Image (cartoon, rainbow, N blue to C red; front, side):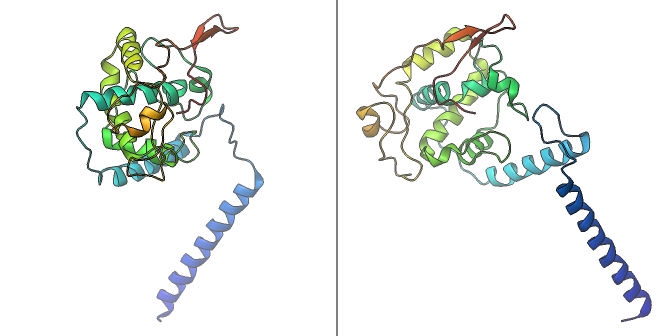
Length: 231
């Protein structure tokens, strides 16, 4: 190895090791604030957001959605959305919830923001690290995840009355287990749900069209999702 090349290689190795050591010391120091009420710096936030979005896109782009225009699929997805998602992602006519206000990064208001169906499927199924978004695929079969993705294509165009009517028609919260992707697992909406086709609403325990509410110290009336709701 020529002296100049050797010098460059040694210098590069020293700089890399020094950078790694500095990063390790910074992490160990605890200087960076991970509180949810203290946002990332612009540089850190942009880096994490870019890495997250590219990670999701590269995986979601490989998916092949089923027929997402099927009415039964959309309606069934509404029931699971009402039970599992409104606490963070809200619903038409609904104000901010404790979860939507307290989470960081702030969950999108899906009653106003349309998301790509493949992107929605991947995120619902796999969740997102360090965001509060659960991996619902651990308890929900793929067909039911697609039902929710189908519903999300319609949600931004619904008003509060239309949303509540669709939830009331949905048959409630039910889905087969995530470890049983053949669609023959049991559900949460009664025995009928276990025997139904994944995209078809059943006559399970239908939820109330309107979620419960109470008034907080800020004077606002907040709607709440059923127990167990998440992102």
